[in-house]
Image 1: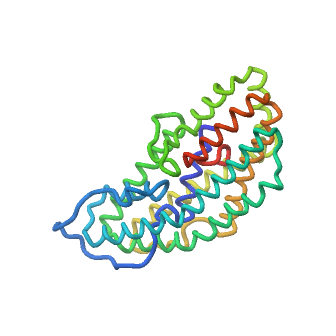
Image 2: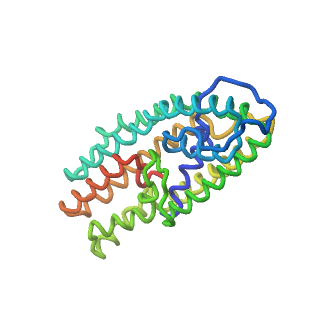
Image 3: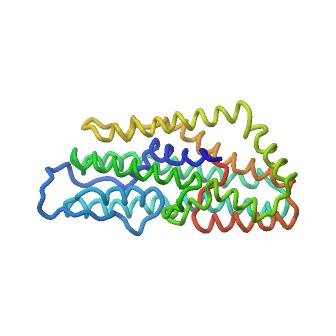
Length: 300
C-alpha cells in the first residue's frame, strides 16, 4: 500500500484537475517588477485546487493576474465540491453496510455512478482551466509554478508513504493520516489477531487485488504518473495543449469506476473476517475519513 496513493496525483495531472481553476480572462502579459507579490492563491480552497494555489504562491504575480486567478480558484472549488461529496456519500454508505455486516453492491452502484458522472462533468472545464492558467502566466512564471508543484507532489507522496503528516488532504484535512500509516493504525485500532491479519492479507491479495490484476493496476498507475509528468513538462512550453494532456475520456471513466469498485470490493473481502465489535470500529473510522474529506481507502 506504500505506492497506491501516488495514483491520485497522476489522475489529477492527467485529467486537467491539476489546474482546475476555471476559464476566461486575460492573455499573457510581460512580467514587470512593479506591484508583483508572492502569496498563495485560493487560500480557502481545498484538495488539488489548494495544492495548485499554494504552488502559485511561489510565483511572483501581478495584481491583475492575482485577481483573475483568485476568481477562477473559487469557481473551481465550487465545481469540485460535488466530486468530494460523491466520494463522501459512497464512504458513508459503505460504513453503514460494514457495521451491519453485509455489503450490498447493487445499493452502492448508483453512488459509484455518481462519482464517475461528476468527474466527467468537470473534466471539460478543468481542461479549459489548465489552458487559461497557462495563458495567464508568462514563461518564467510557468517554470516557477511547475517547479513548485512538482516539489509539493514529491512531499505529499512522501507523507502518503508514512512520512510527516500532511496539511492539505482531499478537502484540506491531514490526508496523510489515511495513507499507509493510517492503514497500519486502523489495524491497531481494530486489535486484529495475527490470524486475522494473515487472512486479510490473503483476501486483499486475491482476485482483483492480487496476481495479474494487481500487476496491471500498478503498471497502469505507473503509466499515468508518466503521463502526468509529461503534462507538467509540456506546461512549461509555449505550445501547451490541455486537450492533448492525459488519458482519453473513456480511459478516465474506466479509471474512476475501477477505483470506487476496488474500494467496495476490499470492504466486501475484509468484512467476513471481522467481529461485530471490529466492524463497528471500522465503520466509525470510515465515517471519520469521509467527514474529514479523505479519499477512498484501497481505491488507488
